[in-house]
Image (cartoon, rainbow, N blue to C red; front, side, top):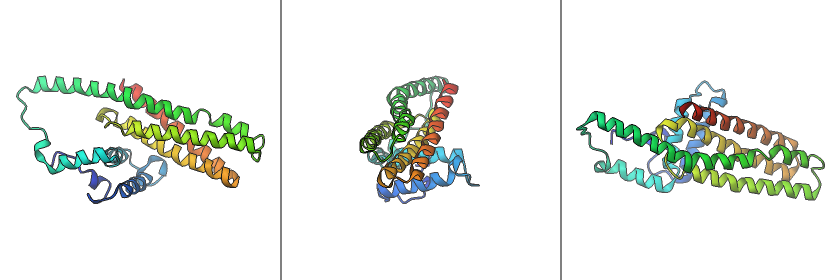
Length: 226
């Protein structure tokens, strides 16, 4: 068990925590350690660890597999290494294949979903600004919000569909932050449609700007690794 990272300890929760408690702990810690928090505790590496932990524990099936692994040492790899050189070559090849699969099955669809949310915002707000109290315009804006929620749900499902390889942990972390910011931004835009308070509209736009920056940073980091 010593070779397996204790994700429960990372999130500062009990192994018996509910899925809701896991999500709550993750979001609380991300707010503390996120670079944009301007906190003295801001720590990118800690964020990477938090995301790695939540990627496993936040998904019920991944969590069950992880729980079995830490409770059954026989599932862990044997320390024997008869041919170190050949093993290292195979490990590097496996890592490249895992990264390629992750890019195809996770990164690309997540990036596409996020773009489908972020790109139309300016046009939608420009159209709404003609008359925010017009029923047809507000209904069209509400449709954009609901569509964005569906895209966000799909993006989250893709992101949690498989573990991210360690060599793209930073890219995955940026996508996690981006999805969180987009989710909060969508809720702010929704609140505007309920009370027409411009503060919600401005906050939603700002959260989307942060999300767009995080998405670009994920793209830039991926280019460096490619």
